[in-house]
Length: 271
Image 1 (cartoon, rainbow, N blue to C red):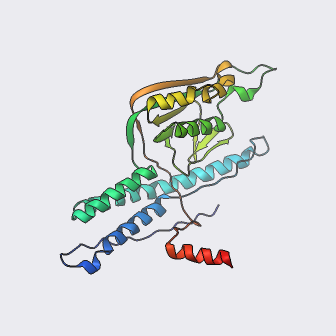
Image 2: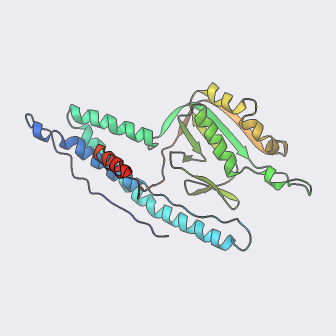
């Protein structure tokens, strides 16, 4: 798997001087460069094709997992350095004038929306675990364990019920998070996790719990697991904490659309 990394050097934002109106545009431009550099440094998308875990394909599957984990570990140090640089930039912006304060506020808002900020608030915790009982000869083993589609369905239901932040076993779920089955484990943000699964969600407690317990809803869909000894337990929390997203993503093909580029695309479509 070939990985491409792009780094952007960010120059120090210029200081606004009284009467220097011609250069007032340089501060937002510098901040935009900071955000772009941070986003590219933080973002990396690791896609691995996971074949069915039969005996002949298992060595290839383990090799793919090791490759993904090696790439993830390599990015961890880069991510830590990037976060330190972000903290230094924020401190420098905070020591500036009122315009810098406004830009810093917008920068913090962007981090919040991207899931890069640790959050706390009321919510629920859902614990899912495999059955400890071995399936009998006439029983379906599939109905005795928690699957990746069960976690995906749970996350979707939480979003639909108004969740503002979701986490699975310490892995923050963001826009491009992936949840997929690989052998006996589940990959979330390229990290292997296994039963029991602890899913946290911050939001209106009544709405979150009600969304899962409504007739024909998520809990009903898990009845086969629970009837076979599996566990799905919902706990109401006055306050819980969900950590910041720690993964990396890279945009190699998608680029922002500007008014000029929209016009060009429209003309190309007409032709």
